[in-house]
Length: 191
Image (cartoon, rainbow, N blue to C red; front, side, top):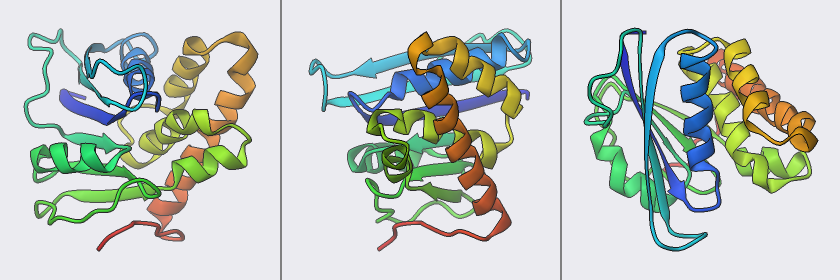
């Protein structure tokens, strides 16, 4: 794993912080690695900007802040506009295609993947699990962590009454990511 810098960004209420927590937990608890997570959000309870930074490593993390993300996950247009220029030229950009339009040039070499996480969550009956759909998609397209580790982290992070729904959300995102990698689905909103 060496050192991998990840930024999750969107707006309050989308579960950005939960995504970061799940990925960090999967790495350090279920894969015996190291992780740090920092978060930033506006004063609004919902609707304001929110972001979380995760640093994963196979060694203790000495600096917990993301300086140039290997992976950027964005779930709001404002987050895309603000953070997309920071992605490393060999990095990965993951966008929620119903909420983000890739409108500016992305650095050469950046792989861009899109998922309609909100639609997939709505098909499961609860829009609020779009973050777990994104987590499943992230797991599939990055291959950074074992799917079983992330599944366990999801189940360890959500309330007991919603474990089944969240597991189905993870599986929906993971399956969609596998289809994207196979080339059987392309769903990227670009201008």
